[in-house]
Length: 227
Image 1 (tube, one colour):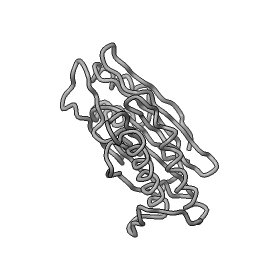
Image 2 (image 1 turned 90 degrees about the horizontal axis):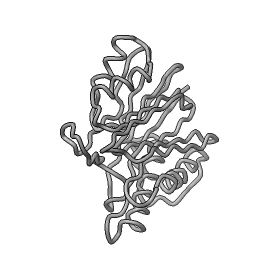
Image 3 (image 1 turned 180 degrees about the horizontal axis):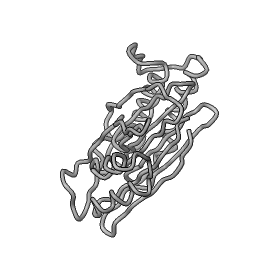
Image 4 (image 1 turned 180 degrees about the vertical axis):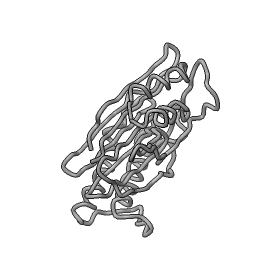
């Protein structure tokens, strides 16, 4: 996978945390996360998930207190176990006595034709294939309508509670597939209008349309080439 471009938008009165992008190219493992609170948790979450991803890819045994879900693929199980470990570590070490920090984002592993993904909170994720935009993960914040001020808080994060629910799925990828990652409080109309009117994926046009539509809402948007 390759990050092709990204844009970030802030307002004088509202903002989101800075995106934390990490990757381990040798095993095809990638993450895009946002840390909320006092501590940057991007690397901690990445490393805990990586333990299980590497074990799955190497077909090696690793102690797994979270069990195996037989309805998930090996890579999906690896991501689920890794995120469960990250949640447990963050909760015990950082938020055990009082809430201090949390993390939201997307963790992905690509092997051959399979792309497995674990998601919580933001960003929203869309697959662009053959000039069509397909929602994979949609998310909304606590904000019910556009506000002139925040808080633009995510609806779920790792590490806030002893247990958490992750969105897990995988898909069979094809040549030319791209992903759009969008951290935004809403699903902007301009995102789909740009695709339908131009039949192309021009992220700068999409970015400008979203700014015009919700000028008071900070967001981050990026485009990945999957293959």
